[in-house]
Amino acid sequence: MSLKGKTLFITGASRGIGLAIGLRAARDGANVVVAAKTETAHPKLPGTIHTAAEELKAAGGNALPLVVDVREEESVAGAIARTVEHFGGLDIVVNNASAINLAPVDKLDMKRFDLMHQVNARGTYLVSKYAIPHLRESAAAGRNPHILALSPPLDMNVKWFAGTTGYSMAKFGMSLVVLGLSGELKGEVGVNALWPRTTIATSAIKNLLGGDSLMRQSRSPEILADAAWRIFNKPSDFTGHFLVDDTFLAGEGVTDFDVYRMDPSQALAPDFFVPEAIKPPATASYGPLTPKG
Image (cartoon, rainbow, N blue to C red; front, top):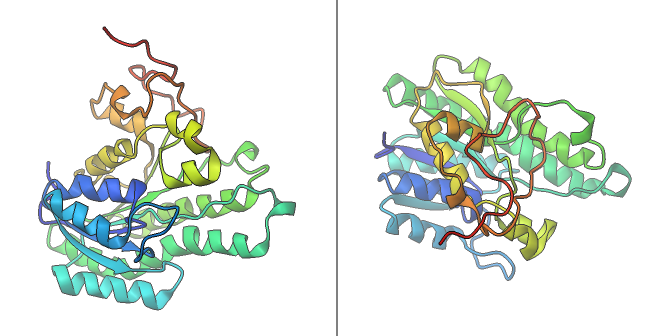
């Protein structure tokens, strides 16, 4: 299994999960487009599109850093066109860019509500829309195209909405795009969603949700990168799935999940939106680990 020579367009790839997915592909010799807004260094956020591109090249891949605002149609259309011009095609789209605000309805101002919907649901729709013609060309050439969204299983349970209605609507909106496109592109492009069972050590966790304490209770972005890599290596008729990272990886034969823990002495923190019906793998531990030796 390899992604050598494949071209990936990854939104929000300057850091975190998007960058991890790109690096996993780059180690195969893939072409990776870093489609993100951060062109110059941010005082609170690590990485820019340029530093990410250097990391991808050092890992063995080719990289194209592009300033992209997924809220803007012209920006997205231009970036997709640049991708195809530069690499000669497009095989995989990763809709990773996301905005989060966990305020309840009476506390969430409409500017932040609009931002989440523009980035999450609309951004996923918009990027996918402009990628489709090129992904169909990839399918016709036998290159096994895929679209992947970092979004949750469609579990319509009040506990996932009460208190975070605005964010939940926007995040589930990404999954609705997956649901629709998996039908529209069936037989041509694999369209799936991937979601973590636990919190993932990203800037959002550190700066917005829980600080260093929650970071220690999280898994690394590499668990999602390894899962995404396996999805992209499946035939494109693997489609319409809403996958939880560790359960999917266990089904692929992975047994060691401790390698993804940021701090084995800490219990893992559960993420939002994981349905009870998607059971955790029997080989994974979620409490503190006893030191070996």
